[in-house]
Image (cartoon, rainbow, N blue to C red; front, side, top):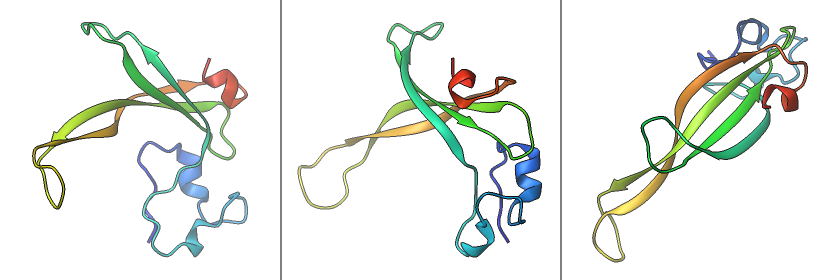
Length: 115
């Protein structure tokens, strides 16, 4: 059974694996979440209450048959992880994209949705 990402638009979730879906996701047996990102941009932006600019990734996602786009906003964060394996000891820093916001846009193209 394929699980569709909870932040993917509704009709996309209903049409997965049907003839009207642009990709037959059912043929990917190991697939657990599916959502097609049509356009992505990365920006540096000031966030309220923070001194440094934050790196954000905006992804435009459209569901087949639905007007407009949903824009997922992800924030790049750096975490310190403990050392494991060979190499210099001490913590290592790892960059991770974490979910920050979800915006509904009625704009007709991914470029317009990301404006």
